[in-house]
Length: 263
Image (cartoon, rainbow, N blue to C red; front, side, top):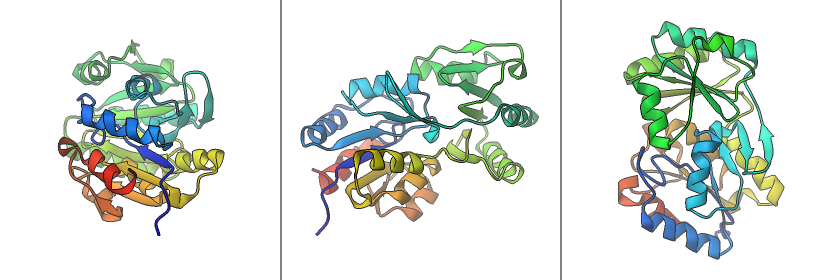
């Protein structure tokens, strides 16, 4: 007999809602039902805290958020877990990203800093209603970084950045979070480790955890959960390792999965 799920960990973009979209009412209603039934719901996202917190508020969640790909676990008042990329390594990554003519987002905790006020940051920040800083040279302000993000309009270029940088920096956690985003975080920062941290904190067993996501940066969290679900719109890599595949985000796949395995 399958154990009752006590913890649901979910990605945001491409899972709860379409990328650059809004939260559908059926998804909000489903999460409300789960919380009423005593299930903890945790957001796990590549977003910075300031971009994820409004989603948590809209869903009326009172749990910490796994943000920056797992580099930080925090709520409005407290930081429970934090891992950063050392300053020197962060500076080298910035220089590497420049060599691909890609845009760089530098995250120093909840500061989002760029050196080009271009279409990439305007779209990225505008979709999330984020404030950002523009500086002449990121190398002048770089410090231990919570995360770095490379953005390019050519998906093949982003794949090459990921593959090349994995060779150059085998000890970093480097992953594509969309076709056009490549993210760099501390090797001890991933969504799977973050889930384990919270599960230990709340004394929740592996088979009482369900994780759901759509991209390669969600693979580790599906692997550590008792039930790992990939969205129908997910990457081929995440579908390969998932226990189950639900309908797409446009088809409210999250709701379908929760009705089958949690509610």
